[in-house]
Amino acid sequence: MEPSPAGYFDGMRIKDRVVVVTGASSGIGRAAALALAGHDCALVLTARREGALQQVAEECTARGGQAIVVPADVTDADAVQQVARQALDRFGRIDVWINAAAVTVFGPFQDTPLQDFRRVVDVNLMGYVHGCRAALAVLREQGRGVLINVSSIVGVIAQPYTPAYGTTKFAIRALSTSLRQELWLDGARGVKVCTVLPATIDTPLFQQAANYTGREVRAMPPVYTPERVAHTIVSLVRRPRREVVVGPMGRSLVLQSKFTPGFVEKLMAFQVHRRHLSRKHPAPAGSGNLHEPAAGTGSARGGWHGGRRTALRRTATAAMLLGAAVASASRRQR
Image 1 (cartoon, rainbow, N blue to C red):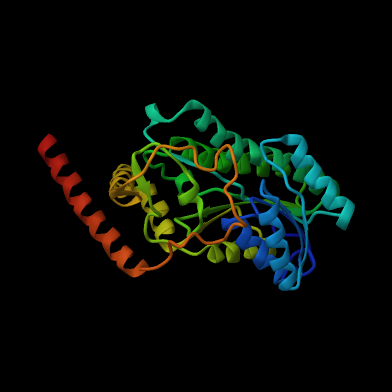
Image 2 (cartoon, rainbow, N blue to C red):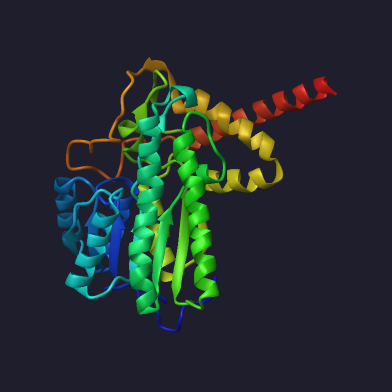
């Protein structure tokens, strides 16, 4: 991407910026809001749970920022436009818009209810479309600003049992790329579009997911903190970049997929089957938080973080064993 205009978001110029965060009630969105509040930003927080948003707003204020709460379901385009209007009414501008709302469903493709598949697409993709339309209408008129879309490494390397989620995360990357191209063609050099691709992050997403696998969903190691993603988001506000992968294992997998895509595809399938879904703990079928928000005041973390070094060793061992198996099978087929 071309450099930002002189004096815009350079160095510590993140201070006092106006930032809209979708999905701010939990996970990455909540962590990003808190991190930005620490830089004295003015936050406009939106998600479905008003009580959870109020809790986040109080935490943001305690860190030195300002925060207003605008409850909205991102699948409602008019509601998202209202978020933008309230941001402008209160603060007079929007400097940064972060699309971080996300839901997911685990299940074999044929066994996943179509209404749940559609809901994931509506939240994760159409919710981002609504956010981008609301944000870019303002940023283009201002001639500057940063739009940040949170995708996933699953948007580069798909995995089994989450086809709806993977589809949306691939699509988010395409959406961001297309928007960057349009802005470039229009000469809107001051408006930046960035995509964040986290690896497995310690958020409540896995506990709240819809699940039709019959097996308990667990965060697949290695697991990184949401604060790590928040730090990356802050860095993108300071220095926008096209795409950034968060987490060393994620970066390794994305790089390896460029050279041995078939091997990485099989490795991902093996890891999900063995480590993402419990082999000991069954789970009843349910739609999780897809159609109704989870109870409580929310949390940035899901309680999954820990034991990353052991997980890395196990992942490396699994990769070597699978690589040997794939090579052996390939030799037998010759």
